[in-house]
Length: 120
Length: 284
Image (cartoon, rainbow over the protein chains, first blue to last red):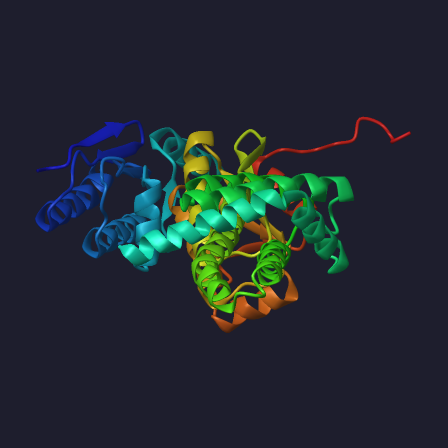
């Protein structure tokens, strides 16, 4: 299942609708990395609220997405990690180090807007 | 079967004897109790009143050879005397004293007929031992029930997640943290972050003297899990011992945000949230 990517101002929003296969994740990664420059976006939000499991591949891909987008000149925030998922992740050592996280979409947008302001 | 009948016959005779000498034996028993300084938490009158009902239940249990009523009575008695600080050895002691007092009276009664005394004791001893057992077990079970109840109450009390400002939570931890409590704390904190939409959390561990490596690791994991939910954690009040433990397990200090005391932690949290606290006037 493909992940829809929405454009909202200077921000791209990708919302997971369900658990994704590895191929879907790879597809999402290349789509986001391409579109972030095409739309001249300054921020990307990946919303994982619907995910109730996060395996090591998904977690590594999210980190790669964040780092690649940084190299393409924008900021990434992962939002909506469930409490149980968060604790399971740290127990597996998947801590998404170096990646910004926020409670939900609203918080993610607030975080990016704050970032845009300080950079300006 | 014949033996059983004979034994019941003897018990009946025994019960009649105990009924007849109720007043005297009871007084002797109470005297022995105060002599051995048991039940010091209770007054003389109370001991006498309790002794009377224990005596009657005791005789009744011997007569009917059923222990349910006695069990219920023992539980009820324990419920009343445990809050007064009566100890297990005292309860066991008084029941054994009663057994001894009654055995002595049997010796006195049947001293001329040794064979009969033997048979009477054959009938009496198993029943008396079972009574002592029932009372002691009843007392210990009641105590354990009280302890379990208190443990539960402490556990519920011990994990408050408090909101002190918009989007600022405090989690004060006091006492010993075992792995089970650590897990519970984490669950409550993560849930609290979600429901209160917290951005900053101050975990105060001033009241925790030491923690083992497992729990320290758990604390670090809690900090990381909170970050995944978008909240910053500030840990305050680390004791030197806990600092030592954290250094030993090689915690990444870039991930841990620590401040010396709770006040400093709250001040830093307010800075992170963009608050500024200013005095309106000089304190009078």
